[in-house]
Image (cartoon, rainbow, N blue to C red):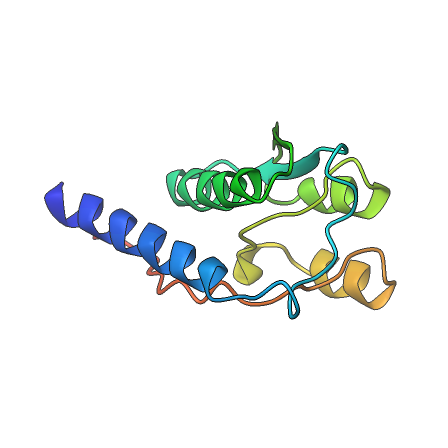
Length: 123
């Protein structure tokens, strides 16, 4: 269990450093600070950690954040129709062709890699 906690902590620190390393001149325009940024809250623990870290950083920048429960596959409908602003994690190996299709149709925008070192399987 301590190993898992350390991995989650390290992932959180890495995510925080990645966000902190960006400068206002290089970051995307996030819109009016009065409008909430709606982050997709996915089903697994790591996504909860990543999403809350991103949300807290956005709040420190003065934005309102809402966490919206979304499934890994259904999140793409919410991102495409605007009911979700962003998703912090997408596992490419289990979303089929919905990601490339919505990306090609310009219904979503890829805003960069998170670069978490993940592992699937029995541990």
